[in-house]
Amino acid sequence: MTSVILWAGFTAARMATHDAFDRRPWGLTVLNIVHELVTLLLMALIIGLFGISALKFRSGGARPRS
Image (cartoon, rainbow, N blue to C red; front, top):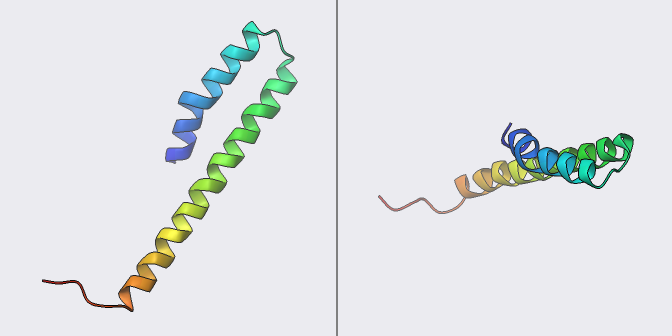
């Protein structure tokens, strides 16, 4: 969810404004914006999976100090 909010607020808004002033075709703008969304979602998925595997690894290791 965070990646979608970041995408809409930073990436999509910036690219749409930049491409509008640069008079690029809307098809190219949409393609670039969707590419950035997919990239952010994949990064979020990878980071999330590393977080889950790190928790599993840590639970089998040494116990935290109390």
